[in-house]
Image (cartoon, rainbow, N blue to C red; front, side, top):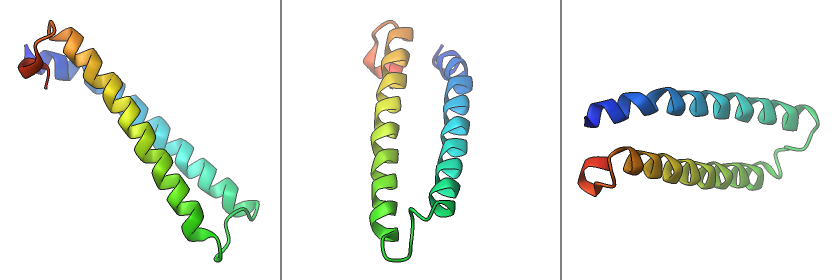
Amino acid sequence: RKYTTLIALLPLISAISGNVGLQASTLTTRAISHEQVRVDNYMKWLGREVMAAVYLGFAIGMVIACISLYMSGLSYPFAF
């Protein structure tokens, strides 16, 4: 049953990671082409992007954890 939960969540995780990758590359290309990212502010810009990725990853991880907990019948050892 544990593998059933994992297999059920794989398409969701794959879709989210694909969308995030595409969005990140689009925003990076746009920022460079509109000269919002320069050599002097690159580290500040990169830090903001990394922190945004950490926050989004944590939020999506919590959502997936809650879904897996619910799918496991509220069994903590089984869900995680």
